[in-house]
Every structure is written in structure tokens, then in C-alpha cells.
Length: 419
Image (cartoon, rainbow, N blue to C red; front, side, top):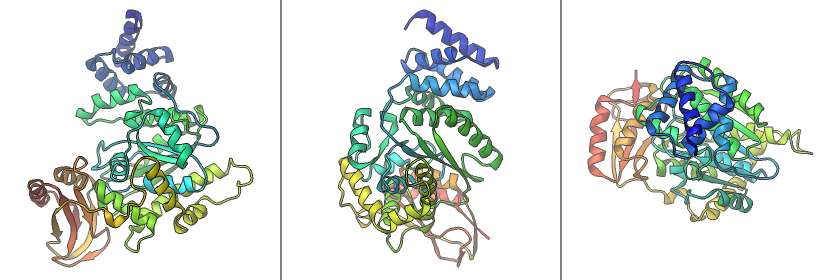
């Protein structure tokens, strides 16, 4: 990498720090230097901070996304490539692992690369890893999809949009993620994955990443702009989220929720099933609209049929097997940590609110996501009435000290508000 291109990148960062717009060439030089690990962490942090303070206009967002894709490898598939993404931040809402087998069972390719936990107790990749390996090279993804129709793998190892992964690392200690950064990060990975049809889930709620509808709408607009630029058909689902859709939080407990839905188990979390069907339905309708002879098919009806007939469950077994896991694994095989403690209600009343951020903190104390068996099982949900002494949730850990620490912390950090 020449001295001139490094200087161009440094000058561009200075320019952004004083609030000026950058051209594609300037943004490309920054991404290229970052992707090739030629730019120091300090300068990379300056760039991240400049973008956080000033934000980027639409044209710059387009340049950023394009440059991130151009400086890394890309996957290639023929025909429709479906995908689903959530802006996330909600613990225990593992819809991806239900949407992927439904969409693949309906006949569309869905190569899903997911993140590990950033702000939540478990990412999709951490949860899928309970069932099968998730670390693959880009050329292996194409093989998995040709074998099983879909995959659920860890995106961090693929090296798609490598500059993005480095920027995420410098931002992590500060805990800031600007909305623009989330948009570019997601979009660059989608373009590099060869997506043609995408459903984007934007949960909104007082203890989530995105707390206000007006912010969700700004994000949706910018996403739609970028999707059009890269010829990706997108449907956006902005939804109010006041609680976790699943019952389990933590890799093993979330994987158990997923398998219970796919198995149509009598104790399955119905809110998780409903959300997964809605997202899969929207994505399938989008794909059918571009499929000859299927334009009139209703996505949610097909999604429900795939789930209830057992075809989605069979497809998930294919995916687990292709990725090197045990295809015969069952929800009852998934057992959480051996140290457990029930948390009971101090008084009677109605559950008024649940705090997603506190849940995440408690689960991290228990050992999530490194201890796959750690986590929390929510016995009670919003708007339910409870009596004094009723069990609200159960904490699990593989470490008795961590369990005790979590129990103590919960005394000052209640997950439930009961009034």
C-alpha cells in the first residue's frame, strides 16, 4: 500500500472530523487502509468517532457500503437469494433459526451469516453453535447452500466487508453504535452475500437499541435507499417490542426454544413462533412476487404450512447435518447449566414491564455467551397476574459462584416490575 493512498485516507479522516462530505475515492482509501490493517487503531477510532458525531448523508452511506464490499471477498449464487436481518438488541428472540429453515423448505436459497453476541446474551451464531459448527470459509458457504438450501453461520469468520469488522472492534469498548454505522454494517454484509430479497426486522422499545419510532423510520428510509442502489428488494418490519418473544435466554435455552417451535412441541413459545411466521411470510411474499407462476402465493400461509407440516423441521435437520452437527438432536436433549435458582415474586400483582437491558446484564454475570448452558428461563411474561411466591424465572449457570453473584445482583436489578 503506497504512502500516497495512506495520506489520502488520513486527509479524508481529517476532512470528516470537521464535518465535510467525502467522495467515493476518499471513503474507498479509508476502507482499503482499514481492511488491509494499514491504518492504526487510533486513526480508525478517529474515523468511527467522526462518523458518530457528524453522521453521513445518503450518498456517503452508499459510498461507504460500496467500499466495504469492494475491499473484501464476495459470495455468488444464481437466482433469488433470500435473507433476514434484525437490528437486534432483544434477548431471547431467536427468529432467524426458524425463518431460515422455513424459507429454505419453501424452495429459496438463504445463506444466513449471523453475528455473535454484541450487546445481547447470545447471538444467532452462538445459539446455532449449540447444534452445529458455525465457522466456515466463503467457498464452503456456497457448498452448504447447494446441499441444504440454506445455512446459519458466523459472519465474523467470512471476512466479508473486513473493514466493518475492524471498525466494530474499535467501537466495542466505547459501546457506541451510530444508526448510520448499523445500516452500513448490515447492508455491506448483505451485498457481499449476494442477497436479492431481504426482510429487515426493526424492534423498537424503551430498553432496546432503537427506542423511538421516529428513529426506526429514519433507519428504514436509509435502508430502502441503499437497497434500491444495490438492487435488493427489501421489506421492513418495524415492530414494538416490550418483551422477549422466546422463553429462554442464553445459547442452550434459546436453541431449545427454536427446536420446540420447529417440532411443534406443546410447550413451545408461541410469541416466538408468531414473530418468525410473520417475518418468514413477508420474505416469502417478496420472493414469490419475482417467481414465475407463484406471484399470487401468500407468504405467511406457505410459511405456516412449512412449519406445521414438519418440512421446516426436516430442513433444519438437513442444515445441521450439512454444517457437521447431529441431525437427530431434539429439544429435550438441550439441558441448561447444572446450577440453578428459581426467582420468586415478593408480592402479588400484574407484570407491568420487563427490562431487556437488565436481563442481558444478569445473563452475562451467569456466564453468557461463553458458557453456552448459562442463562435465564422466563416462566412469566408481561400482563400476567402473579401471587406472592410465584416463580418468575429460573437462572442457570455452569459455575455456582456466578449463579450466586447473579442472584445477589437481581436484588438491586429487578427484571420484572410488578404493580
